[in-house]
Structure formats: C-alpha cells, structure tokens
Image (cartoon, rainbow, N blue to C red):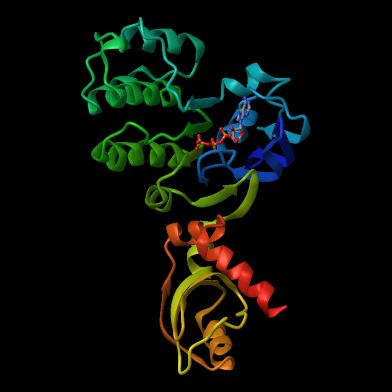
Length: 307
Ligand code: ATP
C-alpha cells in the first residue's frame, strides 16, 4: 500500500478575482499529523474542500488514497472523517440519534469508541443537539468524525468552540490515537501553539500560496531568533543572508533567520555587528515572519535599498 495518502499537485482555484489557491503542492503520508496554518482567508478551507471532493480540481490534480475524490467520491469518503468549520450537524436530532444515523454510513463504526468519547466529554446522549452549547456541538461533531476510525481524518479548525481543557487533553488524545494507529490527520488551525504541540509536519499557506511546507523538526532546527548589536547606528541595516524578518533601529536589531546560528554569527560579524543572543524561533515567530506582516515588509525595503 502506498504511504502517500494525499497528493495535491499544482492546484489552483479562483473565485472571481480572488486566487484562493495558487499552484499548491501538498503531500501527506500515512500515520502523520499535518497542521495547516494560515490567516483568515488564506485558502485552508478551499484546499480541504478539494481533498474531500466537494470542489473539483479545475487546474492541477488531487489524489486521495491514489484516487480522484470527485470521480470516486464514495470509495474515498468512506475512508475519511471530516469535521467541518461550521459543525453542520442536524439540530433536530438527539446525540444518540445522530450517532446511529452516522454509524449507518460507516461500516467501520466503533460503537464502544463512540460511547467512550461521549463519556469522556460527559455528554448526555439523550440531549437534543439544538440544546447544546457551541463547545458541546463541536465535541459531538468530533465524535461523529472519528468513531469510524477513518484512514484520513480532516479537521477544519477543530479547536474553535472548545475550552482549553478539552482542547489540550482530549483533542490531543484523539488526534494522537488516530496517528498512532497508522492513520493520517490533517487539521487547520489559527492556534500556532497548538499546531506546534500536535503536528509532525506544518504547511503554511498565505494568500493561496504555500509559504512553508516542512517537518516541525526541520522548521525548529532551521529557524532562529537573534538579537544583534552594532557599535554604530545602522540605517538602513545591510542585507543579511538567511534573514526572513527583521525589526529594530539604530544599534539594536532582532532577526528571525534560517540556517545555522554560527553562519548567522559570521554574517553579522562581516558587517561589523555582534550576535548577543540566539534561540530557536517559535512557530508563531516563523509564521508572522512569513506572512508579510510589517517586519517582512521592512526587510523587503532593506533589500530594495541595498540593490
Ligand atoms: P478562514 O481561516 O477564515 O476560515 P481559510 O484559510 O479557510 O479562511 P478560505 O475559506 O479557503 O480561507 O478562503 C480563501 C479565499 O477564497 C477567501 O478570500 C474567500 O473569501 C474566498 N472564497 C472561498 N470560497 C469562496 C466562494 N465559494 N465564493 C467566493 N469566494 C470564496
């Protein structure tokens, strides 16, 4: 069996003048957890809709388990668990009715796992869905997405509506269990700290383009945050190799940069500065440095000035 569960090649999608996806390549392998990160409107849900076959690839291709999810929607969807962004579950059913209804669609439905999760969330299965809080609805939707133990679990903003305890303990446990069983999880999130805690692999998407796609380990090893000091004020700061974002003024600067610390120290030394302190950049710092926030604009101005 192929280890590649998802294979997206050169996928583009426009809605009117908006390029929701722009030449996106994305691959996901068996047994791994993929965090999809991007600001509002970055294109995460549009990508997910293509994986589910809810949108047809007009340009580029999408393969799930080696199949086209639009042409073979039945074969593909029965192996996927999906938690939608808007938790669209029928209001008029009770939790128990929803569980029975959902189980009818999935031959692999694991009733004891569903019951165990209902118990963990302290949900009363006799309750009507319309009487549940937003967080409870999210919990019910999550159970219906995972209880058939899908080969691929796709969660669109799973934390939205969940309180901190449920988010940290239960969501983590559910996602970890799925991946430890050799199944694949793809989840989108705005919570960088959560993505850092849960993912094996991080894909950053910005205005429809993939800006970073790498294992979390590589991202951690490759990105550092350093503070730099110069004897004299620098204005503008000469271009430094490997810098993805920089801020500061005069003698003191702070940079997020790629590559080794020693290479960066050498580069700073060459322009007459000194690295005072370096540490691994957090995922949040890497993200902010990649999405064109003020720091990165500052950097492109520096590049312009040094041309
Ligand atoms: P969020 O985190 O806010 O949910 P997202 O990363 O999931 O955002 P998408 O929902 O994929 O972003 O949207 C990407 C872009 O495509 C946005 O500019 C959005 O307005 C646009 N878009 C998405 N779906 C449609 C649609 N059906 N019709 C028109 N524009 C759309």
